[in-house]
Image (cartoon, rainbow, N blue to C red; front, side):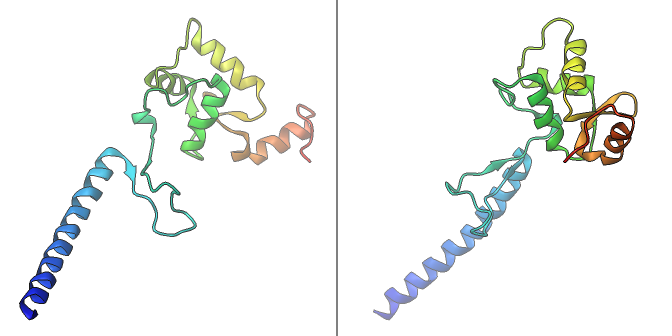
Length: 151
């Protein structure tokens, strides 16, 4: 009986070592693929325990902006990199990488869509950011009567 217990304990220890090695391999592969493993905290863990994918401007997956307007897609893109404005051309390039159809006059159409929306702010003369990132600009516009005061 003691031999069986010792053998079972040894087998269990071998499996634990293998698990630790596999966890290292899994973490390295997840990092390479841009996948963040599910969090251990119950508050932040995925309910279905599936991995979450991190998307950057350099690796936009096909279909990432599926069925979204250009303004909604631009908002999603800008919020991915909070605080970092993007040029019209960078936004359009991300749209193209995702397979989103941009059509003729894409720069003009996107520029107009973003300019008309109060969610976006033109910064540094050539880039777009979220208006909430630039509260001082909004205050100036309110003082000049260009936009309604926020409540």
